[in-house]
Length: 293
Image (cartoon, rainbow, N blue to C red):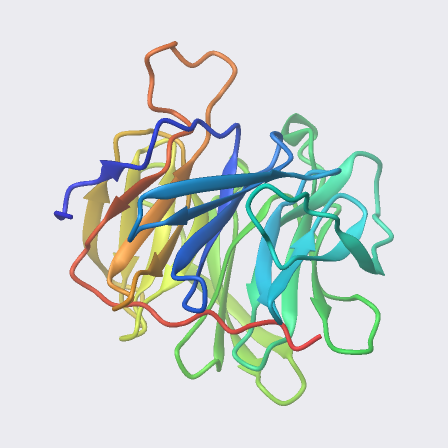
């Protein structure tokens, strides 16, 4: 697979989000939020599988031999996933939203296995800052650790886990922050602007490579940008879909970058909007930490 992006199958997601590579399965997994579906792609066989969900899932993380799903009204456990058998999520932790019409959006585990995920009002046109970033630790209820968010996105952690990245991709904000992250308490502090604005597009989902580079999707620009830990832009990759949503490293050598995208209602019939792509960007990623609870 070359540096240029290659399309995976013919599937089209309404909102493809939260791609995650799990070495035990040698496969990528991701969610189609409005499609209420989980997808799995196994590169070695080029096989695609999917499972129907009872609610929209904004993000997912490995949990034991199954998955943790952040859905509309809380966190759920699911799996293990077996082709041809249904996925039946089991409730883990409910969430009390601050406004009507909310769901979980972007999220992942920190390096210690705590699960963090943000919430948003689904109608972005309302521009309501009711979103929060929640943390889930084993045996504990959900705890809000960042508030005043409209569309939380871009959550990622530095290789040592001591820097947390978070964006707000709403058109009125379009900023990426960095925080100092206490790996003992799981609390972020010292919020500062990391990327004030992308060269083009709004900041969406992100990944961190083994050297600490922060890869952020430029939604509406069809680009993925890599920023160095000190905030310098040093690379830009094109993807043949304007509304790229999130990227993730995977493959046996963690050098394959999977990119999901969004299909708007007015997309042309022959458009690749909503497709999933893979490329080799010349960098290696890090194994995602599984949820500890």
